Length: 439
Ligand SMILES: Cc1cc2nc3c(=O)[nH]c(=O)nc-3n(C[C@H](O)[C@H](O)[C@H](O)COP(=O)(O)OP(=O)(O)OC[C@H]3O[C@@H](n4cnc5c(N)ncnc54)[C@H](O)[C@@H]3O)c2cc1C
Image (cartoon, rainbow, N blue to C red; front, side, top):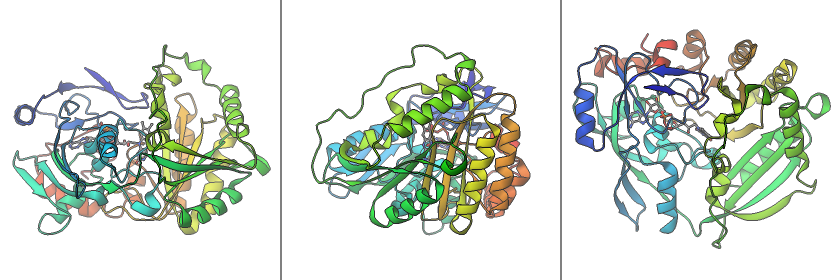
């Protein structure tokens, strides 16, 4: 079958296995193959991390059982194909929350760990790997090993966190949930007139609030460069009975030309001006706050058949103000535009050898797959490198191998683990080959 990343700009013909239960997965894994295998889970990575053109892919979507839960301590054991959104709904009904959640509830816990995903609370609660207590990993040899963040298996654990599926297949994991008082957050929205104001507001907000995120109008120029809306939120004391957020489908595939600088600029301007200058405050279901884009189930069809690329980088704190300005200028000069760009501050390093997070600021944008987009991505990659930053593998589909090696200083440690556990290169993916991750 043909599979694509969420951005739909990259796709691959693969031989797919879709086991119903763990024994079926073991069978699929033992199958004779020549061209390696990788897991495709929720398919919410934008580029080629879960693709393996010409080779095998094991789809874990049906391995979606919660195996046990202790509602005193918040320790949950679940199969790797459980979606973070499903786990979140179950957890909330017991007054717990998945401590770290990406911007979509359709990502699975396996995908969450393999990219060491972060949420709007990275500055306070770190990334996904910080809350996983153990993983049952099927190694490339077929052996199943329980790996933990401390002890003999710590090195393998740190290679698996953020290791984009290359250390083997995660079967199940134990996650420590965070206790909350209710299913809601108290959120505030405020306008920032430009990038400097935005950064000052975020710096102040992250000291005080659990969740902080900014939506930037990436089409604004000159004195308005970097204008946008900042959201901050905290756990609410009281429940909300507002709907947790319904789902609509994109009724049709949008034609590629619908996504042009005029429509994108208009959308960004409307979004910015919808909020009064004084801002506003309201209580919202936490799932609605965390997953605003999930309201339209297959919104990636907005970009038409050719799809889109997402670019996300993080810059270290000291370089953020200058580097972000250069990135925003390059984007507005290119004139391709982007629907709302997301700017978030990060406060902690990820624990994995290839984890993305570092203290600083992260910027994420979507670009339609049109002529000129690869050149723009190359410029952004250069600026990121020049400012000591890195590009996020969960979003990437275009970075060069040399840049990747410079951005991820623990690559050698990661390679050493792979050489030890997978000398025959059983695990493989389009991303691994493109970025020459195996060397
Ligand atoms: C709307 C949207 C918002 C997003 N927001 C954020 C965000 O705020 N923060 C963030 O960090 N990310 C974000 N993401 C990215 C997303 O969270 C990650 O790409 C995540 O890894 C997707 O999980 P998945 O289950 O879809 O995995 P896939 O995309 O299918 O796979 C991702 C990687 O995980 C590996 N993998 C998955 N399951 C297993 C397993 N069982 N064993 C071994 N390897 C496995 C795959 O091989 C692949 O390398 C967002 C994505 C979307 C579409």
